[in-house]
Amino acid sequence: MKHYCPLCGYIYDPEKGDTSSEIEPNIKFEDIPDNWVYSICGADKSVFKTLN
Image (tube, rainbow, N blue to C red; front, side):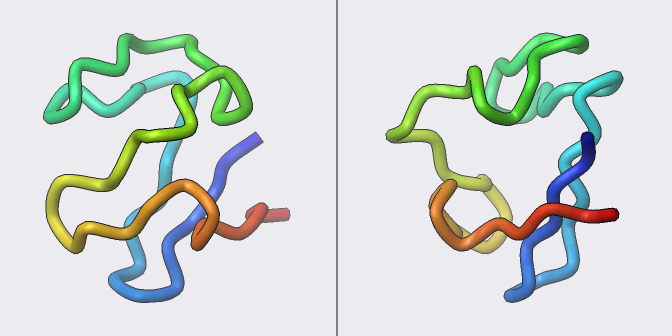
C-alpha cells in the first residue's frame, strides 16, 4: 500500500523504498521506524496519508 505526503506530494512506494533515507525496497510503510522523516520536506511519518 502506498502513502503520500500532503505537504509536498511525495508518494512512498514500498516496492521502491526511500533510498535517500536508507529505507530498502519492499519495506512496508508500517515497518518504517517511527522517527523517520521524509528528507525533502521534513514531514514525519504521522503526516502521511494512505493512498487508495
